[in-house]
Length: 263
Image (cartoon, rainbow, N blue to C red; front, side, top):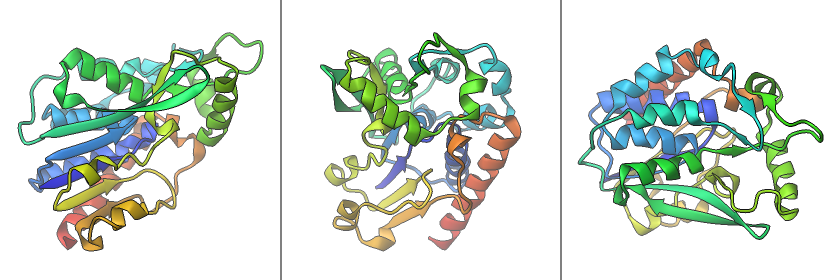
């Protein structure tokens, strides 16, 4: 059995997509998938057996045109990606479980929701994936909305997270369901309950370290870590420039090929 973890990171998910495509070419199959945010989105391509479509979306889509007229209020709209998932048909029968996480806000507190969307209808699964990849955004005081492109220029996930937690305490986000990475962007707990022979980690954080609880449960040579050699910039999460996405896709592809050959 093989497991695959897909970390969150917005547009940086193009790196994951390239790695997934390389592993698909190498005939790698995954029994258990866990993903958060863009990782949940990418996992859905695998779950529905639409790897070629995933490549097409990341390397051929003019996202800049699609997001040009989006106005950001309390969350950063992900409809432009979710609508693409709605068009996908099919089922990868090799995948036994596909776990995603998102955060529910209630009474000024955050609660992580973990769910196996393979047990849900398509509509409910996509709703959960939308939640998992829906980033909060705290607007400057007095501003009703901001253009997506303007937000992308200065986006910094840590800064956004800090401001978001302040607003949560004030009750601002009560009854919202939002990005799972806000609480847990290392959503690998499903692989403790569901032990696999080989665990592939596709990560998008700079200076990532494998959590100790994984090392306590797996031999190190059975964990295959695939990550970018270069460092991501803070605003790369919202950089949907076509050239950037294509370059990341190629980097992810090459990184996975190297790991597949060495393993």
